[in-house]
Image (cartoon, rainbow, N blue to C red; front, side, top):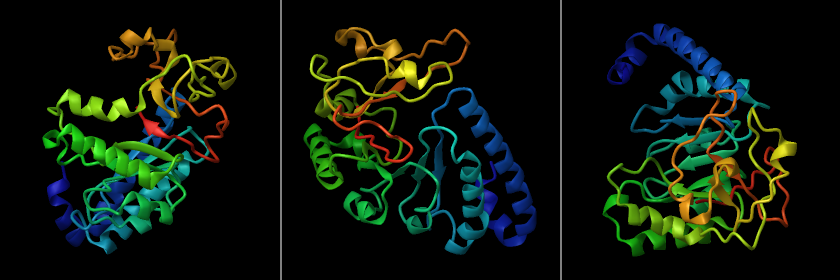
Length: 270
C-alpha cells in the first residue's frame, strides 16, 4: 500500500521508515518460521533490489539489512529457500551472499545470462524463459529458449523456469512445450529422495521407489495417479493432521544421491 510513497518516506522520514520496516520484517520472520514448522520446505523471497525501484544506497539502508536478517533466522531450517531477484537493473552482486539455495531472476529481461550467473555463484540457478513475451511467443521460440538455457546451465544445479510470473492468459500449449522436454518415463528410473515434510520422515520418504526420466520436480508421490491422470492432479488434499503436504517432491538421478543442503541438485522444473 505504501509503494508509491516509499521514495518520499526514504528521503523525508528515514528513521520512522526503518522503525516500521523492522516491525514488518519481524512479522515476516515469524511467519516464515511458522510456515516451516508446519511443513513448508522453504520460502520464496522476492527482492526488488533494482535501479527501477530504488537507488543503490537506499537498497543498502532500507532493504538489504532486513533481507539478511530474515534469512539469518532461517539458516538451518527448511530444505530449500529461493531468492527471486526481481527487476531488470539488478544489484545482483550484493545479493549473492544471501543464505539461500536457489537464485531466480529474469535472465532474458535484464540479465545477467545464465552462463554469466554460473560464473558468479555456485547456487542452483532458476531461469531460462522470457516471462514478459511468453504469451506472444511461438512454440518454436519457447523450445529454442529451453535449448539455449540448458546449453548454458549444464546438467546440475538448474531449474528451468520463467524469469518471473507468466500472465494467467498464457496459452496452455506454450506451457506444455516447455514441459514436453522432460516427459515422465515411468519404467526406467527410480526416485531417490523427497523433500522433508512435517508429516513424512526422510526415512519413510526414501522408502518410496518411483521411476522418473531425469532430475526434476514432480507432484508429491502421495498424490500420484496413473500416468494418464497425472496432468489433471491440481489440488493438494489435506493430510490427517489437517496440514497441506507439499505438491512437489524432489528427485535426483540414481547415480548421484541427494544431499540437498550441501549440494542442491535440482535439475529441471517439469
